[in-house]
Length: 241
Image 1 (cartoon, rainbow, N blue to C red):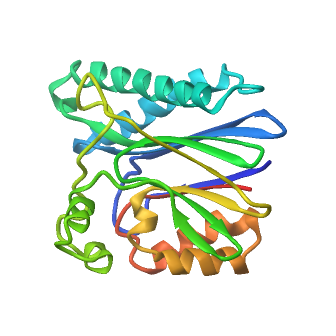
Image 2: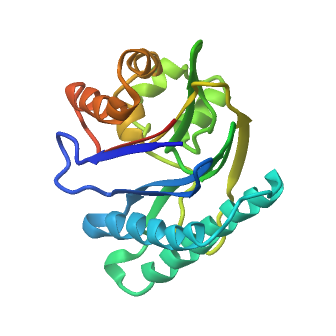
């Protein structure tokens, strides 16, 4: 099992508030974390990096061999909960950091199963031979509007409130964490990304790139595509194959 990842400031932002990490449990299982920070000039970067480093410590010290899906869910949820407290506590150390937070997607891929815990609008996809499926659901204002039938998914892509999220790690002492898991087919790709990718590259384009580009180059090519389309945000793409 291999992981390829890249992050980029994009074409507009002067700093990168995205952060990520990944590691292996063994040759058949890996973990990965992607965060997109928010909050002031420095707060977003501090929030995302604090969260990633806290989860790196917990996940890299864990073992998933022989564990049930429910036990893996507990590992992911516990890692995010610990990161939430770490960011929340740090936000109270300085007035300039007050209110900072981060999206989070934490995943464990083992054999042909992927387990994901998340909050915010960073995403996880499964890309297979026959198409691309978003397996997380955005915690965002525009997603709520889509769910209510007020706007379409196409309208959401350019909606003025598309960057407003309804859940973020580190903003409150307790975080409502969503969870999903799915089975993978032979050759499937797991993509975890921030909205700097998903807002600037359509799902259809992500799928077509996956069919055209070798796995070891795919994350870089996806980021390049987002930049070619404006690169209006920080961009992170992480591929598990």
